[in-house]
Length: 462
Ligand code: FAD
Ligand code: 2HG
Ligand code: ZN
Image 1 (tube, rainbow, N blue to C red):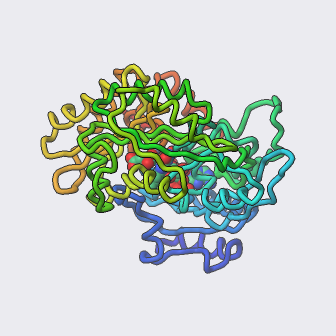
Image 2: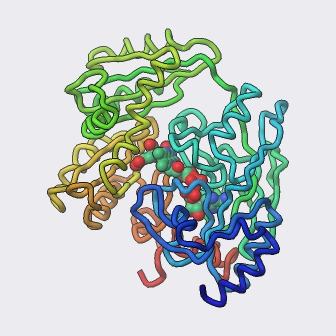
Image 3: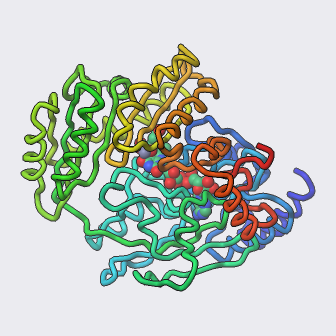
């Protein structure tokens, strides 16, 4: 251990206690590798403060000692932003895990940054309320990480992404100062809006310690359907029609052919409906009372666009349909280490994109496989590219797919963020003036480059 680290450790002992300073490689390993295994770093130290005051002191002392910090929540991020790829100290927020009582009048709650989504959902369900964002990593991802990445998930078409859920925020800045604005006022035009600034900032501007979240009625009437289509155009047209006709539409998710076959193999199942189709939608309607009739009528009116339909009304048949969508990421992880390219396209460009991407990839590396799925209601396609026999594909594949998305007017990061994986591609969507403004904000709040300095912004010389 270098002297600088020993000195820092002895100072931090008095703040968080010995048990919450991890130094041995076997203890820090889980904090140093990302969920996919693609991004593997190393750290001299993992620090686990218990509250905002401790966290602020940890930041101040670590900065004073000259170490950079990677803030980490559940470590489910998919763009290599949550792990110490350059020997940074890891600051885990997992012990900031208190939820305050639900404010039933305002329909809001204040949660610690380390509360997992599933914990927050269970906490507010006791007041018949729900969190506006839901995603398959719910058991591990944290409220702080979800805000820092502006997570999207399956209900964006109804409630928006994480940024739209945050009414107030508390955070520790790079110098250890605390900003706190948690009143939760729906109208509050008193200057710069820190929730908006920190949402999507990926740990580069401040470490979120608490958030005041807007809640939504817990909708108990649910109906889920899986619709099979002969081609991508029909799936896109059906999604657009359903968005117009189903007032209770809660999710409109998609699985394309190769991803469907992979997930079926993974869970040892036949394709549930329309075995020879090209695309499947998972549609969920949610309302205070049973939305089945509304959804069934809307599906009927799609007529011959739809090849086949399966419907789930009770919780076990709904869960059965959802697993084909929610387990795709797990199925891919079981097959190897993919490159994850999370893009959004305008509705009119989606079919071109999905149809062209496999040939763009195979022109670079014939042995790579492409698995596509995502949130069709938002135009968000998750392109997962896997090299031959599960190895990583060549980097050139990332450039080609992201350049194509940008050429079609799409975004190279729909919901996962930029992290380290995409920072050298940021120029595809952002002008030099925008990147200069990003750097100015970063410099103003973190002049010593303490907080996640290798994330989001491209290297100065690129
Ligand atoms: P981490 O992975 O720990 O960190 C992510 C980033 O946020 C890092 O840059 C980190 O430095 C920063 N950070 C973490 N906590 C804080 C904090 N308190 N303050 C400041 N910065 C912080 N994402 C979606 O958007 N939609 C999905 O549908 C979706 N589904 C997923 C399904 C699976 C199976 C998996 C594994 C991931 C999925 N993700 C999805 C990605 C991931 O879950 C989200 O990005 C999530 O928001 C990350 O939360 P986390 O707590 O794990 O953050
Ligand atoms: C999802 O929508 C997640 O399931 C993960 O955003 C996407 O694995 C992926 O590429
Ligand atoms: Zn997603």
